[in-house]
Length: 465
Image 1: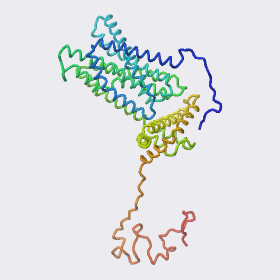
Image 2: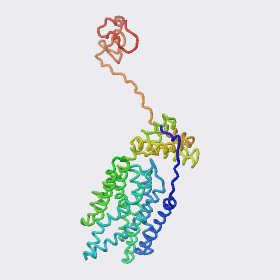
Image 3: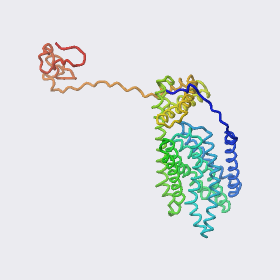
């Protein structure tokens, strides 16, 4: 067990004004706010006020479901909400603005250079848009990876950060497409199921709400594997995020170009490629999450031996069901404050387990001891509220004891009794061994040929004469 350094030192460095935290936060918030205002004006100009409101109302429907799904994946070691808010705002504002401006400029330039607007639109959708959009979304993942490194420790963190960023981007893009479709219906007079708005809503919101998150998640997986790599593999850490970004661009290009494969090209790509890819990535993420729970169960017993945790806590903290039961128990007996305390206790214990695993692998950093002791101090401070709840959860989720096998008597065949019935001439036969010697041979057991002699190395017991 590592503890705090005996002589902690505090180095005071002179920092410039632009290096201060509040300046960086202020600049980032200002950038995102300006991007949001500009993208709002551009979308409203293309769709009109009524179309914008309709698109906004329809585009917001899948957002809570996607956010809840990614938050569920991150329940083992949940990251701070500020990271998720930044990622969603970046995708909805900054990345969407970059994509709209860059795609429009590139498409117009290709149309002017080739004098073929139709080919320019096709090339822009299948080549330019995937490169620009995936690069803009990957920028948020890169920023979190560089500046929030403690919160970015593995594949699940990469998936969550990338998925939330893509959810924000898809939200803004859906407003644009649905608002434009509504404007088209207003001009043509279509309404109901046969309208362009209904078709666009079905394709983008019902059939493929996971399309953009699926693309960008590949980039997040690349960054997540890079986060698991040690410092010795610098080339691999640089190439893995790039490989994930290239895969995301390729999948995005295939999705955008599916309409060029014929009348049923979209449905063919959707059924043969998108759905299996979604299922495979979902399995990968859930499997990774189960491995994280296994890490919690494997690393925390060391703190049990040191006296920081009780013996039941590693089991309870390594089960999502037990964690939920513990929070419910705390809420019933200590109210919302107790439930929040247990949730914080679970998060800190999980962080300790992951920190210890990184320390064993040489990836924890020089401040390992300080961070470990800070987390353990939080656990010790919350132990009075959390331990009863976790002990109750461990008992509630413990597997039932294995039943004790009852010996079943062996049936004795009729021919074992030469004189009929269930008794021989020398007393009743035993079911365990029908040929066991009976009286009067019991007194002559030492001379009976079927009784093995006493062996000097037999287990302790009554010895034969």
